[in-house]
Image (cartoon, rainbow, N blue to C red; front, side):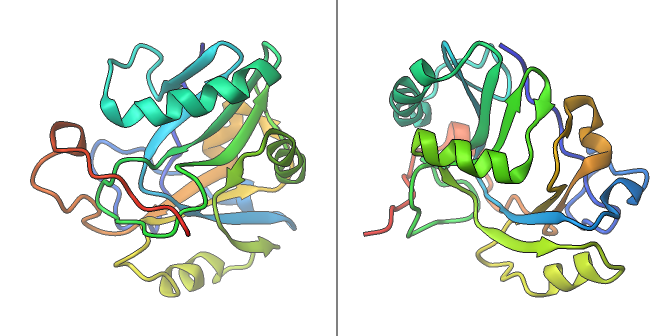
Length: 206
């Protein structure tokens, strides 16, 4: 089991706090093929060949993870030892309420032997495994006004932000250069942390 790395904030991300890491440069994202996806307000989760875990492999029990563990039990037998599926456990409502999710688990990464696989290969693998992906907001080349334009088009009452990555494969150690996130200002709007509050499930699409 391996902990999934941190996604650094874009320099323009208003939701970055003093505890967050910020990308030192955008050079790694100045490529001809970028993928921008919606940043979902859930719990980062890894599914591997022997089960699943939240961001920390030694996470304690929480009732919001029951559905995910049952879901992962159907995925894990189909994974090789070096494969990890990364996504968001969206069962419990956090700061953003969802009312039409395709699944309580939405994937955004496929790692094989410490290499983050290309977006196209990841989508193919998700189809094979029956995994729904996070929504894609943009696919195309980098341009100077791209990130600001995507941020302006977000509905900040419904969207936490977005994540940008190079569409090609890259080493997991290169995540700070090849991925970045934009998070809305004041994202956490509840007085009580979701893990200490009553579990309120998000809603699935009819």
